[in-house]
Length: 286
Image (cartoon, rainbow, N blue to C red; front, top):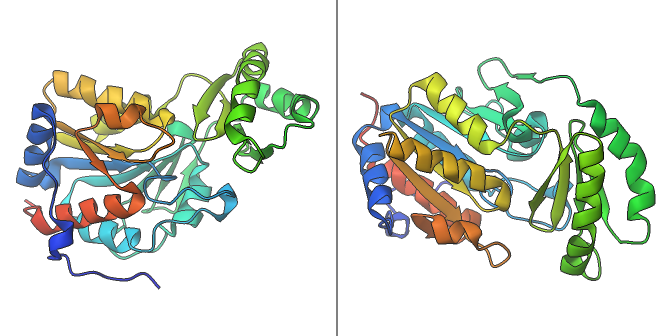
């Protein structure tokens, strides 16, 4: 059962952003939370990274923290490379009081699950995925990888092998070539190479959802290379006059985000503390 910590716990005090735009973003979110979008990656941000992706689950305190914050803001969205329905199951997001309007943007925004309806909307599969699915076994034979078939994309994980980084490096070029021959792209991540259709990424998904909501400020939290487009989207929004806050769920495996973030926290546990701090300090609806 998820634990419910006191929202006034001093350990949940909000950190001060390291940049001016970040400080402006946090101030805007706290001043008018009802006009703010809180968007978060799933794996590595709300859920700890585990060797078997099928065993990933949201941090036990994530749901209470999100449920405390969600009624005070315009929207909470989970933006993930996973299929939307998988993220909903692994996150335990369905039927949670306080999260009645949660949105999960899966497959980098190509899919969408709304808590209001409990339904997923998704495009037809790209034909290149089937071709890649057929070709991968021969290419991966002997590499000690594990393949995750997401339906609209296929992820090749190297974390379980004897040399995860070496296998990742060795496979990156041939998988990129295979993807290109079939009209796909490769999305690198933390010991994973995902072959997926082009045209949608977390930045596109985030900008479209900000526009749909009419959000006046935005927070985005992520941990991996696939979150960089969302970071770029927040930077663009800031340059256009919409305050934003960039949060990195820090790890030693990926450092690119921490170099660009306004706030770096210690993995999903740190994200939970940040969410609780926002819930405690946000002014409430209005």
